[in-house]
Each structure stands twice: as structure tokens, then as C-alpha cells.
Length: 73
Image (cartoon, rainbow, N blue to C red):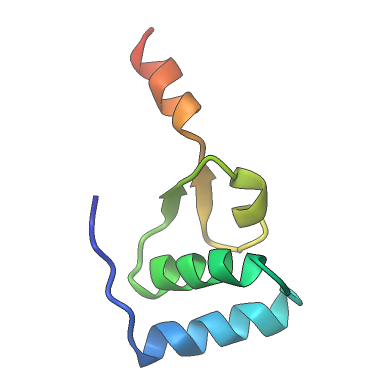
């Protein structure tokens, strides 16, 4: 894992995502994570809630089960 710092660039990307995808309510927190990932040139995020991250172009949401399942074969 890598710690992704927040910056002014992250904030600007977050605001852009919120407006672009018309995000409201609790999903603004997911948008913040997506912004941090995208700004830091990371192309995937490990999450139990892939549906909320699939909307972001350029970001691959991976469910832990898919990694565990492939490691067991």
C-alpha cells in the first residue's frame, strides 16, 4: 500500500469529479478517494464497494475477493 497525500491538486480534482458526475451525499467521500488516486497516477483502488468507483474514468475498482480467489488457484 502507498499513502497518498492530499493537496490542492487533489482538492481541485475532487471538485471536478463531484461536478462532473453530479455526486451528492456520502458518495463525496468516495470521490475524494478517487481524486487522490487519480492525481497520484494510481490506476486502481482496492474496495469492497466497486460499484461506487466504477463511474470514474481511468480508475479500476478491484474487489478483494477477486484477488483472494485468484491467489487460491
